[in-house]
Length: 351
Image 1 (cartoon, rainbow, N blue to C red):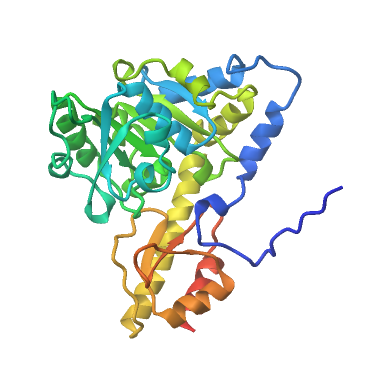
Image 2: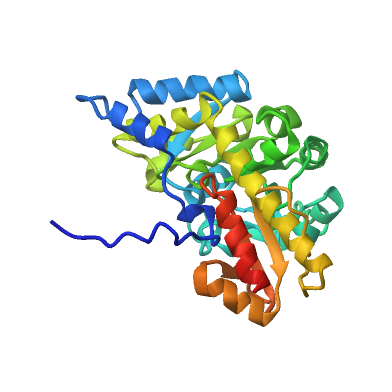
């Protein structure tokens, strides 16, 4: 038997919600699905049930396509909605632009048109910086807008802001895609349903997150406007995102979204981030040289820390020093982050 050294119980991470384990309710759902034989490639009762759950959450037109990961969901969404000559307007900080190894461009064959965006949020005016040149054969055609909800900088689009982007995109013949890897965190912060910031706000396609909110490894492409996407069954196979034993992916998604587990898990992570921010603000009020450059509207806090405070915190906790800024760090909470974890991090920063 192979022996694996498990991390010490006290060794918590604020590096990413990806570091957290799977939620016990999700593990139970996977175990419950591990009974006997079931049809492969999505022709199973769990996948059919998840399709019903998606229609309940997002409307009767919604179509669900379970996949393995968020990058796959983003690539599939954009590839299904655009021709080969299509281009995607996104924030410069967007995951599709910064953290996906060029997959939207190399795998989907699409041009990204990133623009600088304060706190990671696009506006119709920012979209227009790159949404031009239609009919010019020398320019990739801007045919989609992609936003992250919540953003990579921890901010959230309100339903009204999403609607404004959707209307602006549609007026220009573009579709609106949402990278919703942390969609639950945004909905929990805004106090709204998942539909209010997606299907009811005019979103055409959604990458529905799961892994960052307690799943083993499961996401989904959700087509909210069937007229905006085609060929997804074929593209999912082509892009190696079609699971043979899909029941285990779908069972996880059902566990998260059929009830309120998505909201409980996301709400807890957000609550811990709020606790962390409040603690940092208290330290700053007492004279600590701590900056908080972005609002905390989800499960992440960005903080500018002095070198000595950052070094003390790194001795006990893992977290990311933000690229391009020697003082800025990203501190991310997960569904299983506890008040004791947060207080221990604050104590390390305070010295």
